[in-house]
Length: 118
Image (cartoon, rainbow, N blue to C red; front, side):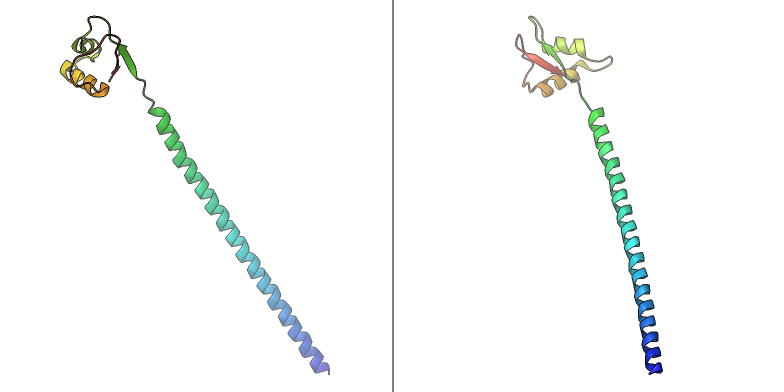
């Protein structure tokens, strides 16, 4: 009877130790998994911040200011091009750009017409 009690006690003790060991392993696994999940979320947040910050910076740095000229009496496309072409810029090229950007098929312009300058 004493042997049976001792066997039961040893069995219960081993089972208790095994259960305790399994609980510790489960706890460690949960902690490692949790830490890995937190690291992944943190890394994704940092990456998203960097990507969206660059997009926002690129969008704000590429703001274009359009300048318009209203055609006055006696103005010609060549005259406007001569006035607004940069130093050393070919006036013929500027006329071509004016036509392209304003959808003009020829150099004829009308009084009061607004022309977008390149």
